Image (cartoon, rainbow, N blue to C red; front, side, top):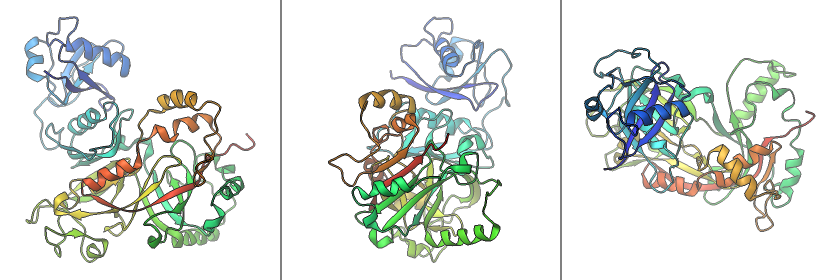
Length: 464
């Protein structure tokens, strides 16, 4: 008998959860010292910080697990167990309905070769089948475990919005802009000179302000086009990570300056997407009427029809749902509803960025398979804590912020926060080529080129 996947959550705060793999040797008799009940309580104490767990309920139904028979009847893969400190079950005690949690929610993971670390699949399934209203969940190849919810996942919800799924990353995304920087100015050691000139970018923006680079996963990157990307006009690109649109002080800029700057930026923009957002869309997607089931759509073909997806020739009854993207890129422009002609898939620092083209076909139910989304980065292979511990020792005394002697096309990295250097080292992430190939193999994208980062601006500490 194999182990059983369960999700443990706090009864009083059900958004706080943790995955648990119950070994086959664990007893279903709650009085045994090696019982599943004891293991769940221990997990609750260590991971969810509930010091005195006392009662257990089945998520969604509210049934309390008291006897050996209760455990035998209910323990199964992907069940959600609610742990109480003594209080009664929180929620309506009834069978699941369309507005409640969906224990049969369709869940799919697009990774076939990309490694999946930790209990990210358990976390994905547990989230999809515990939160009310979820009708489909998809894990991208960059799927990895988050603190509360999986990252690199998309959840489709009917009649329910779950802001906690996105959390404080709401609005985080990426944009590509053409620059006026000649390619020859970033070749070889010349990239260092450009990197040295990137100063005073923080300044008064160190406080919470619109569109700062900040730290953690936010950065600005100058990239040089490689194979397959030149025809897309991506000879020089800057990747600007953006966060939180809020009204704040705009420093010395006048309103006319702001308007003119925005217009100039729009002219240089190649692509602009959100990775963490909630969007209201029609579901299920329907196939474009001008195409047959054997067609694979191109952006040109789809430009003539309304976007949509369906798994068969019949016109489905569509309804609005809420698409929750937690670290995933949309395959279309939300403002026009037209497919994106290109979609960047960045690797880790110093590795290529793949250029993908989203595809829609009958094989993928016109996008239903991947929930109109693709992976947005390579995805973490190590937690930040593990990367900091392991890689700081492995490369002790080495400067990994500059290209190696054998890598003249490497990346010049500006990062003055030492911990971030190791937390976001290339080895802390999955192989972007493998992640991209998984998307191609799934039939949801084609690879059309790649870019190589020459300068990566993370954070510079000046005058602090």
